[in-house]
Image 1: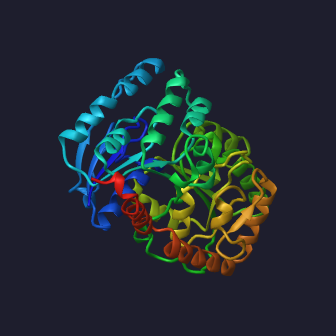
Image 2: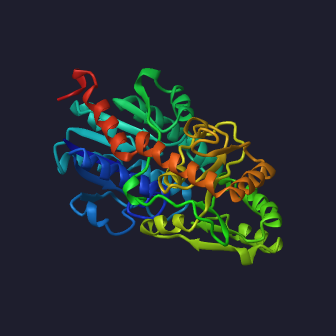
Image 3: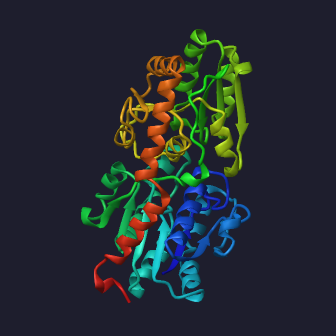
Length: 386
């Protein structure tokens, strides 16, 4: 199957180090593993192709200049005809697959016009997210684009039930398929042992952004360290909250017990996870938690015991006391108590980690997700096909 993968979002360097970058790479990798011949169309390339993706044909879409936000929005909106021309120029495709971005509708409308299945992956309510966290000038046009692209797509793939609920404001439920994120377990091939280390390392991986609950982690680690003096905190990633986080940890006298790696290459993540004894996703309480957190799947694939907030899709993924632990969102005391419990029981940590890895291998691999994607494409009504 000849697949065109489109990522027109200038905020996603497709071969970069962000979680969204890894997501794009893994979907492409899995589609190839399912026999797809993938051509990538992307606004921001972001680095060298990984060796195993060297055969992917890459076409860079016109870059979005770093001008004031209002101008950038209009330039991005005006790029749709170029995207459509690129699709017409560079091949005949059996499937158009796109990661939804704020201003892109050309690919799905092209697929619709050509009678090609067009699948649109929706990872978040981008309009709301953009307005709250980054700024959005022309919201009306963004809403118009959303209506156009959701309508034109043959099917929508939502990464969580909360995202599906958002999409139901635009389309009928029959058009939306929920497929949570996943992991490539081959990157994390070694299960951990139940051995006791001298130190106890609590780890976090991800972009250091406001919605990841980092102040909760700081408070919980402070409480834990009072009880477990050899506890350490390993924070893998970078982002706008790093300065505040470093200052707070220093104020609490915990800077000597904390390591910040900054942004790292994806190839370094497995080794860093191996240095952790437990990994956390301490999300605060949120009314509409729509995430399908990649970090949690990677923690689990590495055989790590995980402690995550009891919120959204995570409550479906984690069976408490079996393959991980749940804590009330925003509750630093409960998080610290759970971490202390795991410190006291290496055997429990080991059993949780083994069960976690089995869970993701059985149900949440990118290969399985690619199989679902291609099944959806092949099952679409015949009238949409050439």
